[in-house]
Image (cartoon, rainbow, N blue to C red; front, side, top):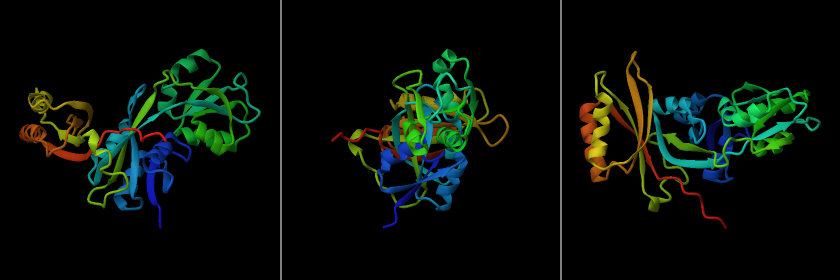
Length: 286
């Protein structure tokens, strides 16, 4: 049986790969992509059966390139995964923390380690495209003064030494990922599971360019008692227009959600359902 291929941004050993394995288990083929848009392209083309996109972190906030991928047609959100994020400082086997001069990692990862970096001013932080890619770059070189901020999994994969552990500013650091497949494709493993935990729905709404337009699209949900758990603004397709990703508790089949969406459609330039999915609940421990 051919395993399901699942795209993610980054190299093998990235936190996104860990999220893939958390959702699907080990019987999948993780497919690394350099850019977020490549993840979306791979799903739309059918080159992979699904993909994961990080959308927000408890320390660094929203991951805007992921939202730009979701806003393009052809993708459907079918699940979410929340992963704890622990950052490690990695170096070559002969490296030491005191001997490092430069540290490379994804800019979001570096933003989550601000306290550590401010306490070690001899380290120059340099942003690169991926945490695991940074670890691989260190492993392929011979510079003992170069380190990477990445996962413990990346240290094991690339044969690096852990020089410092738990660099993140808070111990409850977490990232939320959305599970995505091609619109109209067959359901993927895990889709529709955890039904006892309710529903969430993601909408893409484009407002009219006039005063009060954002309030007009939000009020129906408040009037109907529908909770909005997320609101993200991105540029529209014309200058100075805006599109919003809304996440709400419920599903369009619910009467209150249906009434709120109908009123919003009357007031907005456009409304599109990106997907409905169950909130993440960790699998039971054995």
